Image 1 (cartoon, rainbow, N blue to C red):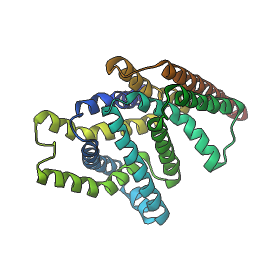
Image 2 (spheres, rainbow, N blue to C red; image 1 turned 30 degrees about the vertical axis):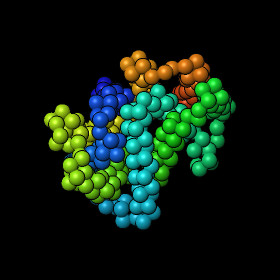
Image 3 (cartoon, rainbow, N blue to C red; image 1 turned 60 degrees about the vertical axis):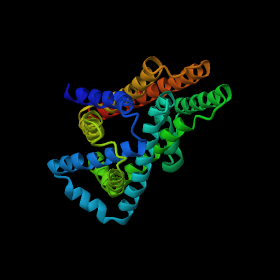
Length: 296
């Protein structure tokens, strides 16, 4: 029960995060990102200290390969965060939600290209349907969904590289925010000196900016706790909660245009995800059945 609560909490925060970023619409995206980094590194340092993971961090940073990998993941996750914040506050939340729906399928493609993983027929069909949905949006809507595909690709590559880094989720994010912190603090310092910084200009905005660390770190810690307690298939289904909430906010709360082309595209994507999830669940049950039979 605790694992489910942690997972739901994490995905609810990620899914409802557009409400938070919309409340900071008057603040430039780069300034929001800088506060997100600055406040997160402080909270994550405390989390790493409490978990006794500084030894893991030192071992990881002692490896030149791991350090280079973390440098690359830092660039990818900061670019992903910045684009997402900009998309939300520029009226492109619908495209952002599409990106996170597509992300699991991008992960499948990256696994084939970089890890030489093989695809089952249902997975091939799922990826084909997703590609057809994107193509339909390009032809029907007349615009390449670069926001969706950039968010999906950067997050997919981030996950791929983090997998090879051999470092825990919370510890790795602390390392990434620590690498970003000097640039973020310098940017905020310049803004403060010039009198253009949003922090300190009003209690509401200042409080929201200070909350950026919790908005970033808390769901990640909860996610890490949930992964240890829940089945992989359960986490696989729950991952669609966040983009579903983002989709609902975009269409029903923020009234972003939802055309017939969007409907067809999301129909393709949702069908492909249902097929992909069914195949993943079937394979997981088959593996568990084989283990149970071997145990007998």
